Length: 370
Ligand code: ADP
Image 1: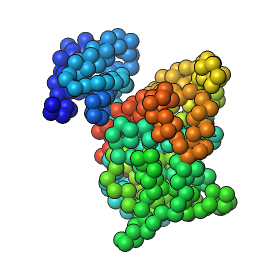
Image 2 (image 1 turned 180 degrees about the horizontal axis):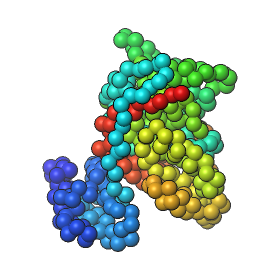
Image 3 (image 1 turned 45 degrees about the vertical axis):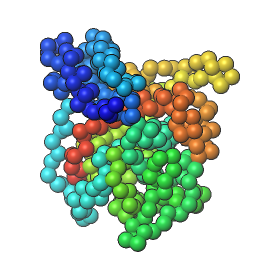
Image 4 (image 1 turned 90 degrees about the vertical axis):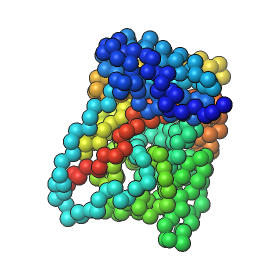
């Protein structure tokens, strides 16, 4: 049997007619983020959010059409708000004396850089970044993860890697590798319990070094675990690399308390698109009886995302297995890849993939610094 190609999938999808325009969904440019991983296929259908309800039958029909292809074992189609054209980015207005080199030179072989951010600490941002990265790798992507949280790097512990990275002959630093990811963190250089005082320019320098001087090689996606809140790391990333977008992690109660909004407005200010919100610690699942309880309420993130006009990327339950596995350096997506929690992260990963496809060639914005 010959391997399935994207053209085969597109041909199957071109039999599906968009009821709004009367054209098929491929001709209409509604299909994005198509990926094939062995016999599993995923893609997004871009729609006007106002049409979400009446598009559900179309989504199902698209899944059925692809599933009918020879050799396909699973199909995951998601509806997503259509990608607005990015706002034009203006000419440099950098008023700081640190005029910098063109951003594209920092990570030339990385297709898409996604920042994982939160308004405040403790919402599970790093846990989400790690599991999202492993889930993306399980979907066949070449993935790196960069710990931009120089103040409190947690990736070494969560990924169970603590060696010091090697320096290569060309003086570049080799990233560490685990769970299918290339990994770089300040925590590899500085012990976790060492209190470091970082001044702004040092943060910027350390981050730039972890991008420029690390031999990342070719990657489909670099997931960047940002420090919480807004500060120098956010500025550096927004200014120095072409971010495909930011993902905001929030708990249900924090969304109500505007912390997520703080994170979002930071990226909006520097013209980085927010890909959407992930609700972490959503529903509590009792480890003994499996009963679901909505401790902090449920669905708040979806409603809030809608209100703020950004996408809702999915929800991750509050489950002690997520904490135990991440504390022991064996993220749940790697240690129980067939379980329901890994599946929840994979769903989010597919949505992120769909939202970033084609969004990778934008130049980094130049921003004013007073
Ligand atoms: P942040 O990066 O936002 O400071 P962390 O990722 O370090 O947060 O997570 C804080 C704590 O919450 C960690 O102990 C982590 O294991 C735990 N945690 C994160 N997400 C979940 C979840 N969905 N279910 C259970 N525990 C979680």
